[in-house]
Image (cartoon, rainbow, N blue to C red; front, side):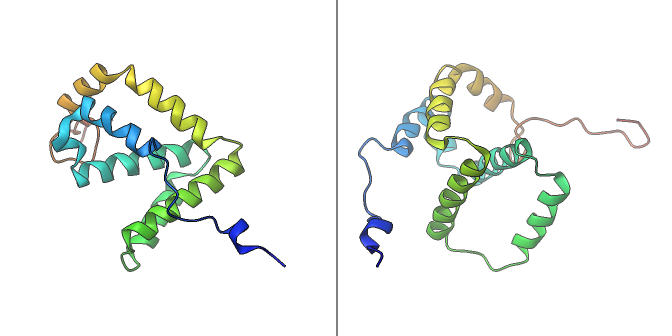
Length: 145
C-alpha cells in the first residue's frame, strides 16, 4: 500500500527566501517596477528563454512552430495550473538532460547580478512594443540577407 502523504507533499510549503522572491530585487535593480510588472514583456522574455532551452536540447524550429500552432489551436488554460505544469515539465526535462535545475537557477541568478548595467543598456536599446529583445534590421525588397 502506498502512503499518499509520502508521494503527495503539501502544496503550501514555501520557503521564506524562495528563488522567486530572490529574483524580485534583481528585477527591480535592472528594470524598475514598471517593466518588471509588464505582463507582455515577461511573456516575451519567458518564451524566448524557453525556446533557447529547447533549442539547446535539440528541438528544431519546425517542431517549435508545430507546437505553437497546436497550443494556440486549443482553449486557453488557467494560469496557476499552467505554471505548475511548467515547473513539473522543466524538472522532467532537466532529469532527461542530466541537468540540476536548482543549481542552474542559482548560478544564473548570481551571474546576472554581475550584469545589471549591461542588461539595463540592452533594455534601453530594445525596440518598444516588440516581442523581440533586439532591433532586427529590415531587408530592402530585392536585397539579399
